[in-house]
Each structure stands twice: as C-alpha cells, then as structure tokens.
Image 1: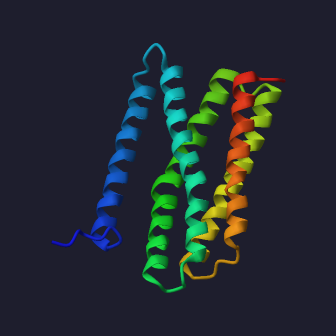
Image 2: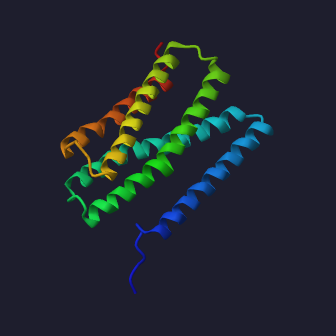
Image 3: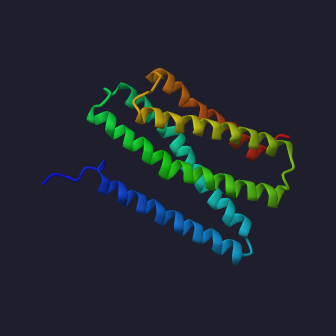
Length: 180
C-alpha cells in the first residue's frame, strides 16, 4: 500500500477546505464577540490577535527556510515541484489570512484602547508595516519560484530569514515596555 501523496489535487482541495472551515469558525467567533460582546471583549480580541500574530510569524520564519532548500533543488525536479506547492499553500492559506487578521484586530485594538495615541504605538505600526513589506517580498518570491525564476542564493535567503525575527523582537519590546 502506497501512502497518498500530499502534493496532488485531492490533498490540496482538502487543505483548502480545512483552511476555509477554520477561517469560517474564526469569523463566527469574531462576529459573536462583536455582536454579543462579553464583559471582557478586549481580552478576547487581544487573544485572537495574538493567535493571528503567532500564525503569521510562524509562516514568516518558515517560508524563507523553504526557499533555502528550494534554491538547492534542481529546476523541474520532483523536489522543486513539491517545494512550490508547500510555499504556495503556506503563503496563501496560512500567512495571508493570519496577516489580515493581525492587521484587522490590531488596528481595532489600537483604536478602541489607545485611540491611536502613543509614540510606542506609532513605532510599532511602522515596524508592522515593514513586516508586511517583508511578507509581500516573500509573496513575490513564491511567485518567482513557481515560475522557476528565483534570483537569490541560499545564503541570501538565510539572511532574509532574520528580518522577521529582528522586527518581531523590536515589536514585542515596544508592546511590553512601551518606552515612549
């Protein structure tokens, strides 16, 4: 008995359905929280924001590692084609929805709790914009890899892997310490 390949259309369709189901449940939870707010709505939205940030950061840290390995795979090989599927699914089904929720919930929290005031908050928003730019750069790289047009070396992708980590550290320090 041969195990089913995870790169075919069937597993891809099932993965998309699972992601759609998770997003629908999350949307329903957010709708319930907004239309039937509990006493501690802020804490619920903050918890969902943190979950979205963790999901987005996981993708931002893992995707460039896939690029490193993909760079070493011969163009047109089965390994290269598998990396294309992994990269596309990670970016479209995990990273993009997580980034959207991070922004949506984060902006709502910044407005409702802080009224968009505070130097630390403005600095944090600037760093999150930079993190979003890194995300978009990775999205263009996913498209380039899918066309077999990667221009970066494995070493360059290793360096790019550090950008989200550095930004994440700075953002967490701003949020927790609120230095200004």
